[in-house]
Image (cartoon, rainbow, N blue to C red; front, side, top):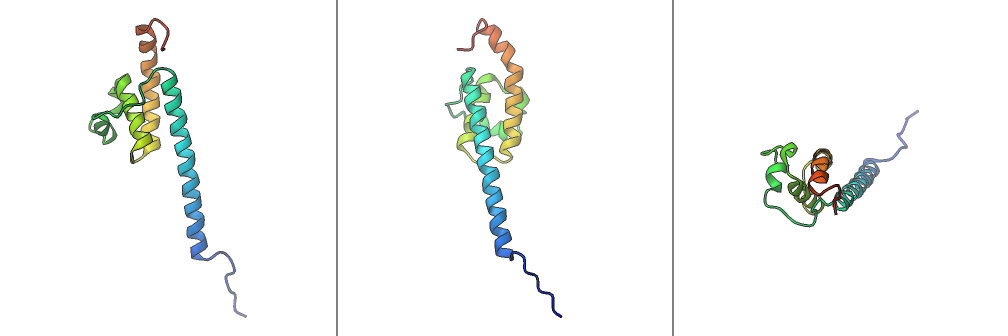
Length: 113
């Protein structure tokens, strides 16, 4: 008696992998947009492309040294450009913004707007 595999074929598996990748990508994009919106709401200038963003993305300069404005440029790049390990970069930018926030609050007299 011959046993024949009756499950999904390779094309179906490839299609499912693509669907999962697209879902993850969509979720990643939603998270990036949410981060950019939150950052913008506290005054991070997220609407401008910065020439120095690629040096942070490439690792030439550590994101941990980025200024408030540079963090905004990084978020702009994450939303508008193809960034390798976008989620990893976004996580580091979010951490940097959270570290810079108290100083920004102090400079602006407790108000970020």
